[in-house]
Amino acid sequence: MMAATPLSVPLVEEILHSYDEDLELVPQNISEPGYHPVLFMFNNMTNLKTVPVDILFGLCDQYYEYIVIIPYIKSSKSDKVRSVSTILYLNNAVAVVGGNMFYGMPKKFEDVEMSEFTFKVMDHKTSQELINMVYKKGKESFTSDYMENYDTYNLIVSIFQQEGIQRYRDTYLCYHFVFDWNNAVFSQASYQFETSDDAIPGVESIHVESNSFMVDANSVYGSFYVDANW
Image (spheres, rainbow, N blue to C red):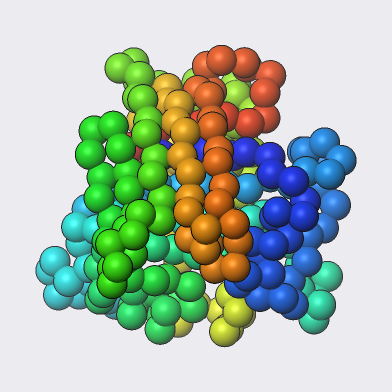
């Protein structure tokens, strides 16, 4: 599940600085003044294959993850515009270690559950609910050629195409994930989710609702469900 949504600049800065205070937002023409786009992803990574972590079959497969991505940012050390993943919650300890070591990603191990209609993240030690998402998926499927008519799709693709930045290093030690947009299958989707206080470290609770990309063809914000290979 992918969704792009506008959040207030102070809130986005709070999320960004919970990850790295050296990063700052840069002007962009997607959101209205006072707002900044944020991408939320709820992923079923049951068939993920990466190199070299998954040389041994099954080492990192079968896990779920929640990701927050903020595009259009830069560091004080460079004027290059990039995007950043500020937090990734997933339920596979090996993938957490591999993501931190090989990719420099801020992955954290928590209990994650995904069903046909819900996605939940719970604190591994206390079982406190951190994130609760309820979603609806349409039955009809679409290709990337069809999706290119919708601004939500084009916005999310543009975010993925931005070069990422990591707090610990500027380069990866092994291959980038390759997202196969052309052979992906897309469906209508809508959801609402909320986080508890400190689900994103130092940030109060957030409530987000995202309508299907089919609601308004001219809207740059919305959500869709995608089935694709990584």
